[in-house]
Length: 420
Image (tube, rainbow, N blue to C red; front, top):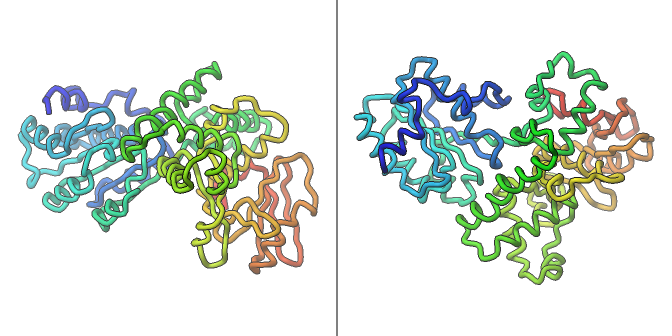
């Protein structure tokens, strides 16, 4: 490990601060929650899709430490995104350059895209156990715990924070909208439509040219994951097929995933289909829901539904929204907002079951009691006294023998502090 490379990553050793282009002034909602854990012993893990701000949060934490008078050479940052090197080599180079004794000083170690470092979990466990004064903050663009071994190795040592693309609330804050103005539909709705159609990747919020957004998502998010990240970890022979499956899901949000049917359609073994979809899921490109069964999420073995993890992926493959398709976009937003895991289909069908509550998305101009049938059916079968219908405009409560159904506009629901 060349000293110059470490110095390049750690400019604050020389400048005394983080470049403001790296530690941006805008902070995501989750930032304060992560910052609170800086003083404790646990390893902090930031996981989530590429380009949604994990590295930025790391730089913001580093700047915070510097402002709190942490010795600038006691902060080490390294990214494994483009460099193949062992963590031990990085740490040894750091100790040599800065003449550090890890038993005597509190040192903060930030490791970006750590899943690309071979054997990272064992390396970190070793240093974590040997040097109690070390504080690790790590990030990964795939689930760091995709292999059971990783989770077992770091059990009891790690706190994971999963970052999503920007929420609508964060998007409005980024655009400079004050929270006191969140209640004004005429001000919020145009921004909601823009956010819903083009998604929650912060670097796409500024370009005026919509073509820039599409190129950005393709080159810096999708292609990097499909052709570099996933094949490197799983040694895939046909990464192009990942793109085929992603396009299928992105252009048909909520599509039923029938492995046997897809096997016939694409001429692939059903186990290959199943594995490839799991790779897309573990890389945070898609969200997969299983059919709800009371008291058990093992129902996820049955037929599933799949959604893109952000509407930017819909925009990439289907930039022109026609007819009633915006309802599918609305459904995708709701699924991802709740990190939903279940729908329900048993004669009737409900889009989302969240904490046992049925939630149906009906993004249309007018609704009546007939639109409550699916939710009421679930409430009756599972003895639930509460349901929800997410609407385009209507806001009201309807009471039935089975219980209450709340109608709430999607844009307003997204801005609630806790969406259900």
